[in-house]
Picture 1 (tube, rainbow over the protein chains, first blue to last red):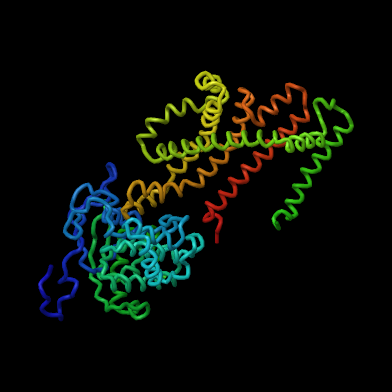
Picture 2: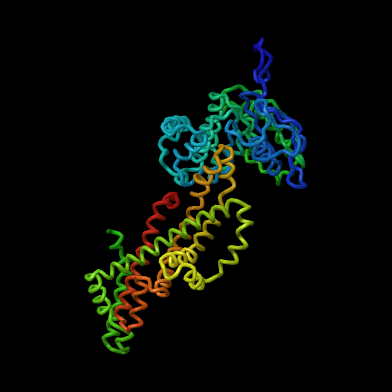
Length: 279
Length: 255
C-alpha cells in the first residue's frame, strides 16, 4: 500500500510499488548438501523478474520453493504479506517439460478445465472461461485435441492457459521456452509479456538464455557459486513494449548481455557453459 | 467389415480352417480310435444338438456368469488394493509382506480350503476365482499407481486438487494402461479357475460338461465343450480389447 506517486520523472514506477514477494536469508539443503545459501531478493507488484545461472545452479530449486513445492531450511519467503507454507492457487508454475506436465488423456479443453475444477467453478461456467483463455492463447481450434497431437509450442500454450485459469497473482516459469524452436520461442516471449502486463501478474522467469532474460525482464538476477548465491542484480532499463528487432539491437541490450556473459563465463569455463542464446 | 476381409485376416482364418480340415481327414483315416479322437463334424453335430435342446446355452451362461462375476470381484479388489499400495507408503509397508507370502500359492490348492468353508457352492467357486485372478490386476495396479509422474503430483498440488480428486482425475487415468493390461491377464485366469472349480465340485457349466463327457467316454461331447470354451475365451478377450481401445484412445493418436 503505497501513497500516491509524486513525480513521474526520475523514479522508475516499479520502485515505487509494493513488493509482491519477499525472499530473505533463504537457504535450501538436500540432505547434507546446501543448494542455495542466503538468498535475498524481492519481486515488486507486476514486475517481470528473470533469474539466470548455469545449469545446476539451483534455479529450479529456488522456483520450487517459491511455488511451495520445496521447503527452505532457513530464511523467510513471504508472498502478499504471508509466509509461504505450501502450494497455493494464486502462485502458478509453468514447468519446463510441458509434455510431462499435461494430462495426456485429457483434451486441451480438459487440461485447462482441470484448474477450474480444482477451484470448484461450476461446470456450466467452465466452458465459457476455457473458450476465452484458449482464444487469448491462440488454441481455439485445438480445443478437442489431445496433447500428443500438438506441437511443443502448442503444448506449452496449453500449460500457460491452464495456469491462467488458476487466476494467479504470481507466475513462476521454469525455462518454459528452452525446448522450443527459435521462432516459436520469440512469439511466445512476446505473448507472455503481453499477457502478464494485461493481467498485472508478477512473474519470476528462469532461463539460462541470457538474451531471453534481458529481453523479458525488468530486472535480471544472476545465480552462481556453490552453494548458489546471488552474484548480481541488474536493472534492465529498456523501453516497453519490447520489440524483437529494435530491443535486441539496442546498445544497452548488448551491454547487459556483455556483462552477464562475463559474469557467467568467469564462473564456468566456456566449454561447460551452455549458452543457448549465443547465436 | 473391411477389416474382416483384410488379406492377413483371411489368411489367418484360412490357416485355422485348414487345421480343422486336417483334423477331419485324420479322423476319417481312423488312425486313432474315434473314442479318443472324434471328427470335428461329430463335435459340431453335438453342438447343434445341444444348441437345440438348450443345454448348451445353460452351460455357457453358467460358465460365463461365474467367470465374469469372479473376475469383477478380482478386479475391484485388485484395483482398490493396488491403488492403496501404490499410492500410500503405510499400506505398502503393512500389506506387502503378507501379499508376497500368499501370492505364490496356486489358486487350485486353495480349493479344498474354500470347499471346507463354503461347500460345493457358487460362493466357493467365486472365492477361488477371485483369489486366483486378483494377482495380475493387483500387481499391475500397484505398478500403475506407484509410477504416476511426480510432475503430475506437483501440478495437482499447485492447483490445489483434493486427495480424492488427485486419485480420481490424475492417478487412476495415469494407471489405467497398466490396469487394463492386468485385467486381461486376470480374465484369462478367471476362465481357467471357473473350469477347474466346476470340475472339482460338480457345478453346472462347460467345465463340468467336459469333465462328465470324459468320464463317460463321450469324446465328441468333450471336444464340443472345448470348442465352446475357446469361443467364450476368445469373445471375452475381444470385449476387453474393445474397451481398451476406447478407454485408451488418447494413447493411439500419435503424431
